[in-house]
Amino acid sequence: MNFLKGYFGEFGGRYIPEVLIPAVDDFAKVWEEAKKDEQFWKEFLHLAQTYIGRPSPLYFAENISKELGGAKIYVKREDLNHTGAHKINNCLGQALLVKRMGKKRIITETGAGQNGVAVATVCAKMGFDCTVYMGEDDIARQRPNVFWMERLGAKVVSVTSGTKTLKDAVNEALRDWATNVENTHYMIGSALGPAPFPEMVREFQRIIGRETKEQILKAEGKLPNKIIACVGGGSNSIGIFYDFLQDAVELIGVEAGGKGIEGDEHASRFFGKNGRTGIVQGYKSIFLQNKDGQISSTHSVSAGLDYAGIGPEHAFLHASGRVKYTYATDDEAIDALKKVMEKEGMIPALESSHAWAQAMKCAPKMSPDQIIVVNQSGRGDKDIFLIADVLGDEAWFDFLAKKSKK
Ligand SMILES: Cc1ncc(COP(=O)(O)O)c(C=O)c1O
Image (cartoon, rainbow, N blue to C red; front, side):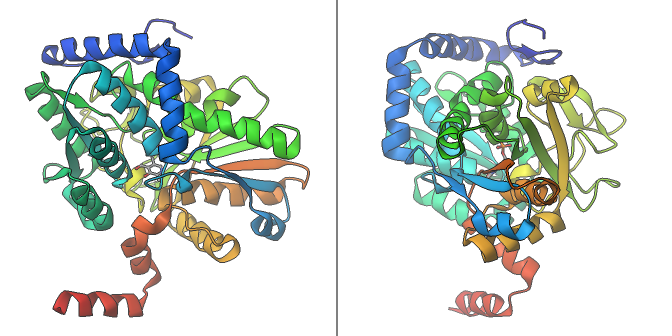
């Protein structure tokens, strides 16, 4: 392990334009102080309980476990958080830091819109001006979240450059930050970006793993054998993994295999043929890139996993072998989603359905005294348009057609 500040092995660091250095330095200083301040964590925990609704339950998915006939599957219900995903844990923590810095304007990027909704929510609560950058394609597939962001008072900027998805939204947000650095904070939504963001986002998301450990020990008197989480930028996964890194627990991160990893229509940084070390958007990690080092376009049915880069701590954990990574295709994620809806009465987000797909592959090969924990990072209500498309729900199309005529 390389203990240079802001690095995880060779990955991480702070590769930013000069104009941003004072802002990131100031922010890093505020974070270093807050990290050691009991009062800060007390306020964070209080709001986590009263505003987010933590602790989120750990639920035993008995029906699916029985049907698969192997390990017991427990589900960490981050989908039950206020705003419907894990993203709010990080937004709340960063908002408390921004309050300390005295800045009044927050910008962010969003893919699935979950981060955008969570940022808009905390901005409404804390009285910050809010701008969300979102790729035009993501706006089209996640319209319900755009609607709510705007109702919550955020300005949603449609990004029409590049592939019109998350990486282009990040670029636009970085541009805005460089122009308005005096009064603006960039609330990065995943465990990536220049230091100290990856470490800081992890610390705000660690609450998932801490609660899980306590809950599973209470329910089963032992630790799980496997913990499975989907990996976009990497925040829900590092959040649940971190407190188990020293334990004999297998940790599995699931990337988006899209239409299969042989071609280019996926977002698997570790299994795609174009995943290589690079320095992009302020940090060093593994990125899907072409031979000239330009970022490749990616594909996933889930907007939140559709990103060419991965948080630097994951790049390190992959290189060290401590965390195992794999991928689930669009079809596997959708099949898993259908099963969870039908057997357990839950609607996981398409992102989280990737973790479920892997759990369904593992569980039958395990014995009933073994335990899997799936991190259900978000709820799937936002995916209604996509899922209805995939399932070809004619009544839904009819309803939309009638609505649009009104
Ligand atoms: C519900 C949900 N899960 C997972 C992710 C992926 O992000 P991360 O890897 O940072 O947890 C997203 C991103 O938007 C999301 O909305």
